[in-house]
Image 1 (cartoon, rainbow, N blue to C red):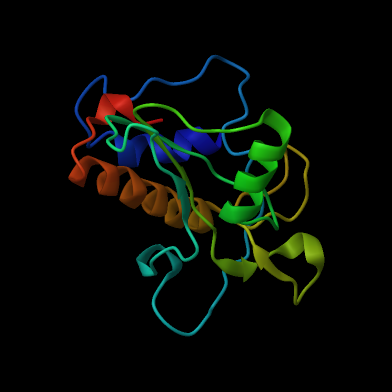
Image 2 (cartoon, rainbow, N blue to C red; image 1 turned 60 degrees about the horizontal axis):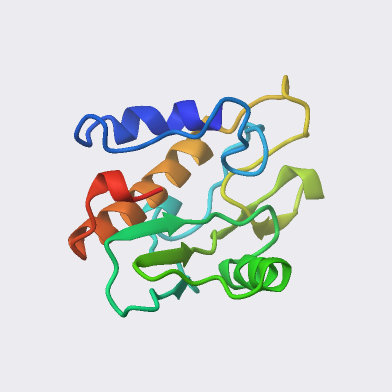
Length: 162
C-alpha cells in the first residue's frame, strides 16, 4: 500500500520509467500505518534536505543506473549500508550507484507519546489494518522523488533507477 502513495507522484515521470518489483515484495520494509500529524518547527519534512546520505560509487567511476535503498525504522543510511556490506560482502557495481539516504528524525507513535526516531513515516501499530500516516507517506514520497530527480540530473535515465 505504501507503493500506491508513491505512484501518483511518480506518474509525472515518463511512461515506463520505473520497473515495479513482483507482487509480494516489501518495498519499504513494512506496510504503512499511523495517523497523528507532527507539528515541528522549521520547514515541512519534505522540504528539508536529507542528511547523512551514504552512496557507494560505481567501480568504473561513472554510473548509468542507480539503486535507492531505504533503511528500516530507527536505522540510518550508513547503518543499512554497513549491514548490507557485512551480510553480502563488497557491495559495489561497475556502473551502478547505490544510494542509502537517512530519514529525518520524526514522531514515531510506536515509541509512545513522545517517541522520536529516524523513520520514513509514522506508525501506530504493525497491523495491516492500522491507521495510516498519509501526510507522512506523502512527505516521504516527495523525498524519494527528490532523490530520483537528483540522479536524473547526473545523467541517469529514469528507467535505470530503482
